Length: 158
Image (cartoon, rainbow, N blue to C red):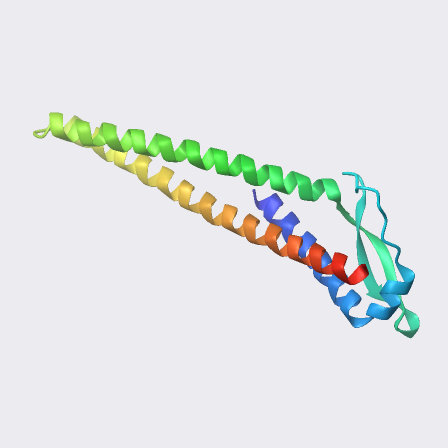
């Protein structure tokens, strides 16, 4: 997951660089760039823009490919489904824990250790769910930022 998060940072940084260069020299970008009708393939690299000699806009391919963005979206979907699965497990264990407490109100030492063990497992799973929620939110923000950046760039290049 950390690799995906780092990957999204690299994509966002590349897009910011591209967009800032496109904003600095929009007239040059419009004259030097042609908007194609073909759909981008997963192996197509994203383009980064820099200012070259004489403030000329120079477009260079980056190490980030369109497929990387698609993989990021898929990872977000998988993480969301894993999160839902963990939530249902926690809810099931919570119900079992409550039922166990009702049945065995006067527990012995071994039952108390089992309760403590169950409670610890619940706490760990809740912590994992919270961590994955924040990672999903970060992925959503990164994708939304990237989408806005691409839309802005698309409208400026047209």
